[in-house]
Image 1 (cartoon, rainbow, N blue to C red):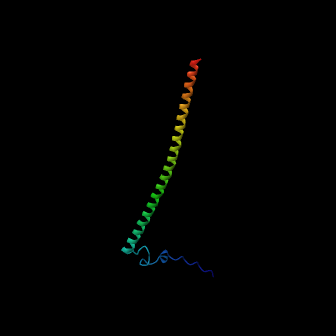
Image 2: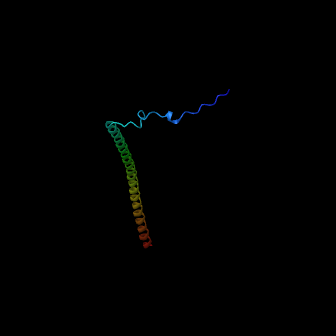
Image 3: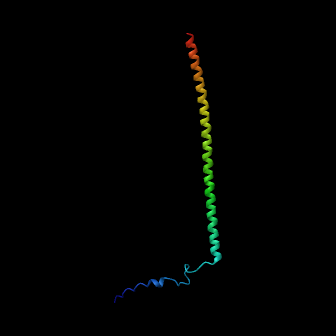
Length: 100
């Protein structure tokens, strides 16, 4: 004869007793304090690293802007010299033209 399948066991049989479950155990105050201290330590480390990174980014930007500023100042000086040269040249042309 063919035997009937056995019914599945109830879900309650898979659960452990409440006393042995990790969720039901309360950590002692010392463990809570250590956990909180570790969390704070990690947060402080992340914060300091973030600030270091931001500072490095700002320094890089500052260096780039300083370099760009120096280049622009040099260009202003060059253009100022060129304008003076052209003005002097035009003055000479007018003087020579007046002599003719």
